[in-house]
Length: 399
Image (cartoon, rainbow, N blue to C red; front, side, top):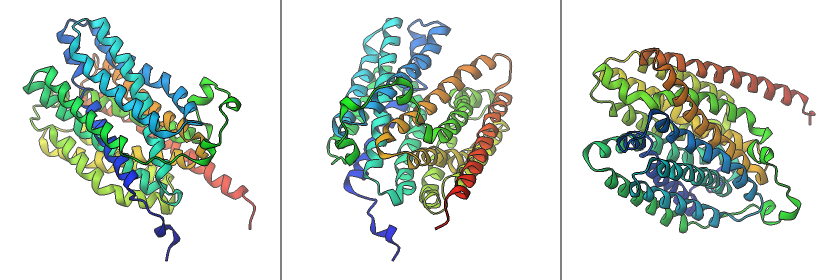
């Protein structure tokens, strides 16, 4: 019998963490497309609307080094629950103010809570996954992230269109409460290296806690890929309206279905053959999906694009996360996980900002095609990482 099959993946704690993370992402991601039009409705300028994304990204990226540092010596449960409760609290504050400056301040603190939560949740998950099944396990955990990112924006848009903003927030809050309850029921595992760590011996460095050198390659690929994806996330609804495509939900639906179908296959591919070939495969399909979307004038091509996105992008985020964590010592996994999610947030945030400026000069289909160039950059980086890995294997002594 293969010894890997003896190690249990589907523990109670892993399942609870995965579903808790799914509800957390659903609660949060449904706000992304709805906060900009809401703040506009209460009198925000174009710059202030842009700050909705920028301030959030700044808060998330700024806090992650501190959280990564704490994960080197603190147990997991209080960190996970503190972040989940903070996210719920700041979500419920949004409808309580009609003052733009206060709204933006809430957004900054919401970003800090989000950066904290995504860092500790991924780290807590990898702590309960057997090392021999890290690709498969974190692939399934990453699926809770990916499906939340795919489904929640369309749900948020629908609720924003059919009901008052405060009711959208209440539903988001309910999903957040479910996440808190699930996280509270988890039995967390903390690595021995963390339990035995002496805080006084751990010197804090912002840069050292922001960047984990061993997993810098996957993080850089994540930044490039999500920079391109940020354009899709920002403009797909406007794009569909301009092209007269009335069933844009097919993009999200097909995306979610294919991401779910592919995860068992790609997770096992990762564990058997490593991450780089899988990463190249996923980047190629994501690139093809962006081009299919840019050429779409019908619901059929929107669905085809969603299928390709589900195969490529739907598998790429958990693959890059698993790759980064597999390269990192257990005591530094919090830093690596934070770096991966900072790359994701920065990529989407900066992509929306830069291509939002370029949208003044290009038709959206052309804009999508321009954004696909960042997928080519990501492909080249992955090839460089493949070459580095091959050279490293050659340098290993022969047994």
